[in-house]
Image 1 (cartoon, rainbow, N blue to C red):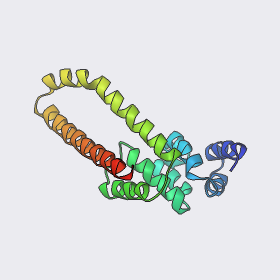
Image 2: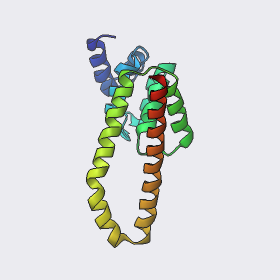
Image 3: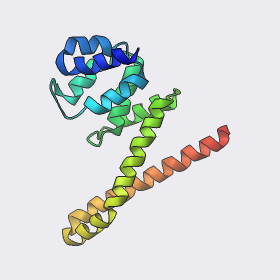
Length: 159
């Protein structure tokens, strides 16, 4: 799909839901992913994020992108969806989509590290509730470290 069609899709997503669905069915994941990250927000002119994603997920590739966006969304707590997204990514060569994913993860981790001093300061005043949150954060970071180590080991095997 050409750049003009991608721009037409962006415009139609805002103005005409039926046209958006029609165009979304022809987008490649590389074209669709930036649009989803731009428009798949909790509040949207057509309603919920889930409804927008539902309109766009008509083929296997677009389903992969939907799962990817769900995987990246902080509001997503469904571990099954996260696992599906990880499996979809593992089974295909995502190229530009993977690059975008790494950019987002890197940006989010960098933001978290910038907030760490504030988080530590707030936790001193927050008591046990903050302790539970920090323990959850520690567990999440440990999981991220383990996943990163596993991915690096896999890359060494491939190389």
